[in-house]
Image (cartoon, rainbow, N blue to C red; front, side, top):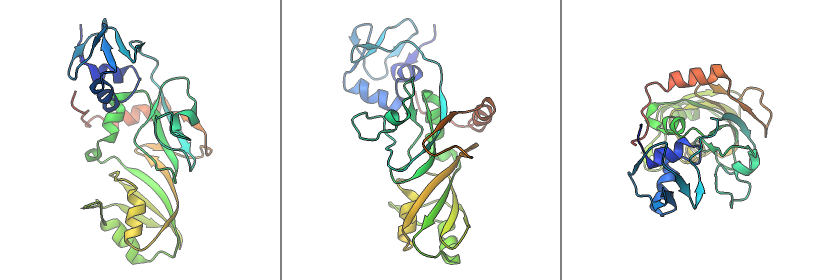
Amino acid sequence: MEEKRINKAISDTGYCSRRVADGLIDSGRVTVNGQVAVMGLKVTAEDEIRVDGNLISHKPPTVYIALNKPRGIECTTNRKTRNNIVDFVKHKERIFPVGRLDKDSEGLILLTNDGDIVNKILRARNNHEKEYIVRVNRPINAEFIRRMGQGVPILGTVTRKSVVEKLDDYTFRIILTQGLNRQIRRMCEYLGYTVVALKRIRIMNIHLGDLKLGTYRNLSPLELSELNLLLTDSKKTIE
């Protein structure tokens, strides 16, 4: 019978991501067959896994959804946080966001209970594209577009080269392949601009399209097929 490390087994149930599972294990909240689990423990489908005494061994149907997140919603699974994304979506399955979209931004974010696909997408070195439409507080010039595209020093590093296109005097499109904390806002601030509106419109092959603000949809079989193809060469986190 196949054995898995305990963190992956928890993630595969859709209860949480593997990283969150590590924290649960480390804090002694996970038991296997009545015994407190330790990091690295291997389990099988016959083992009884509980978190805080609640059985989680059952694997629910896999869920993949695209949400057009409004401003003001926090991309956290912490139910104690006001306006958290889990309570906003109110999905019947236990799902979690793939990455983050800061509270002041809106647009596309994916949610799922598939821990493996989360780990693949979040590995920045896989160069997965994310596309944004950004509006700033003053007119954009050619030097701004050039410097945004070449890379800007923030957070102790220089951002990767990106594709940047001016849409009008105050608005530009940018395609990133990394996800530093509040990256676009920090890049603009370094160049003397302030972001007044930021919308993510694409993650890899998944487009926001005409999805209404505050609503979500299931990913189509074609989108999932294309997504998995794009992730073929992406390595999972170490088990």
